[in-house]
Image (tube, helix red, strand yellow):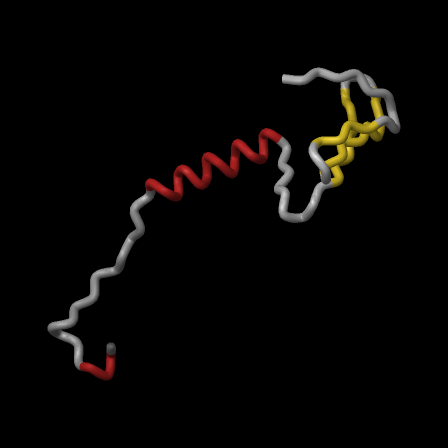
Length: 78
């Protein structure tokens, strides 16, 4: 992990097309701005973790398929 010190209005460049700007420092909170192409997904860690857990739960859940009685139904009902 690279650890850097930055002041307000200073930036960090990642690769050719991502810039992280320090917008504000207030107490123990730091506001940052991230300029990245739309194809790059940027999430807060807690949001990313929630999405990952939701996707994991969806991948192991079993869909409920309703039972259809094809023997007793006439063709117009199908």
